[in-house]
Length: 197
Image (tube, rainbow, N blue to C red; front, side, top):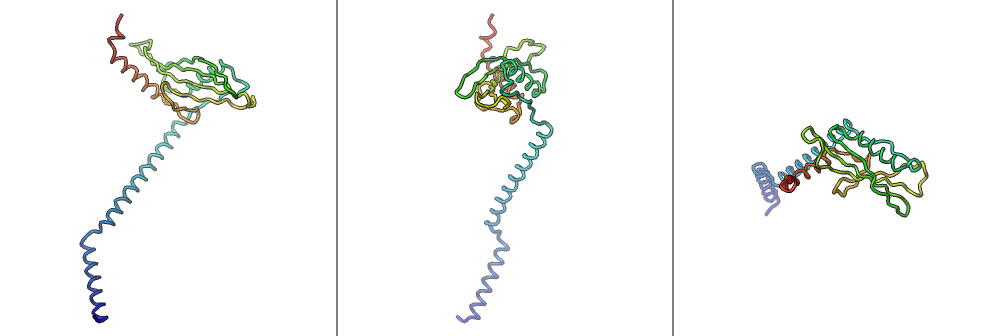
């Protein structure tokens, strides 16, 4: 075959390929565009969620108090500070709470002071709540830190393992509500036991 015939047949093949690519969609390009669209949508969704979170935090900033120092700590001051913290964090006035000192644990380098906060909702129909939820508060007082260093404070909800620190995590009232609702549902399933006189 001569070079002119070869180049002519090459041109004819190129034109056939071009015509075929214009009539038939390229599946690789379509798959790539679909994947690109999915990634772009996921990115946009993440950006929107992050923006919503920032707006929520601006409207409802983390609430905290100035916790006492090691030198200022007493069991009673600890109880009062927990009460002050919840008075600042809980917006709904229907929640009643009480703070009770449970125990002091002596560790090698610190003392742990453990408090229990009882939560309940009293209503006109049920002025004394039959169900309560709770939060365990721990104040860590170091034996080695200077008296002007702040104490460590953290808390966990009833039947929960996740540790929260005031000022780092927003206290959510719905945690207590969900727990009391679950306890009410449980009691209703055994109402024949609780309604006996």
